[in-house]
Length: 427
Image (cartoon, rainbow, N blue to C red; front, side):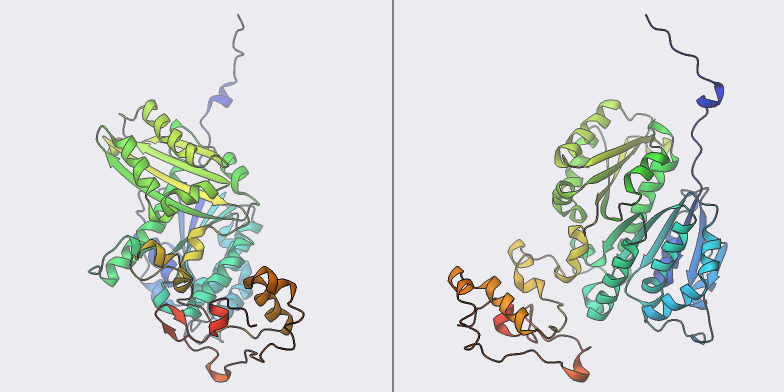
């Protein structure tokens, strides 16, 4: 029988909790810091970053960074991300200094405006240059906020994904699946804030809570570093003797996971489970078996922790990441209606054009490609013969109306020619 080798006492010491800082960027990000329970995130440093002095004045965090120049004249970015980016680049050293000393940095922000969209990518790059693991938690605007904010948010999201180690993105439009017609605007934004904080809380628990199964910081780094992935997430809770079955059902029916479809498309999945002292290994096994069954292609990392305050309760947070590609949830701001609609309507081409921007000018070659893609097999073969018969329907600039809202009627953008919207080949 082999005997166990004696392990040095130093090796038996518990792993050190990684130093963490949580940055709130822009007015939305600063507000999210206020939603977080300081006791729950004990040990983390909180930093508020904004160009708006009023927003910072109302924050209770200890460290505040007011980005200001003569160019802004105390008026903030005016909703222009380029101004936010320029001032962040100008004070890059200040941002980098604030990031130093942390092993992992959480950046929370609402995209679409000037500060959140402009500063966040620069801050993420500054944080990464310090050697920290950078995880961004961001929201995309509601459709009703207009296509300008949506476009600015999408551009900023791509920039953040190019520098952060992982991005958890919550399109605010998703919350319409969780509310009804009587839900107030304040309650809607509160629900959105709580959903994003759930994502931060889930990763925080993975890193800091000792428990039945411990997730090491090195494991998380190896999973997400250099993947530049975008993630979807969900957090559910259940109680009682059937809690393990209930949390699985809630996860698989969760709108933010697209009723389980996101799990099937994921490359990596992080699972954070928490329960009271009555949490059993059998319950952990049942939950993980069901989750693993729906994400067979993914690398799964799981942590199970014990919290005495959760007696008779089971809380599960799932973060599903797809490397180098947008998750389905990040594409939905342009396609999801204001309230729940029948599946057929929500997945149709009409709903997809609800907030489409004006069509850009098409070259002769691009028009031929559109016709070839939507036409019949015969049309593809004879596309060369159609050149002389093609109508001169070139899309021209709308001049001073280029930045105006599209004309939407019954879910269709009437500014886009009908033959393009409906894929009709011109014979």
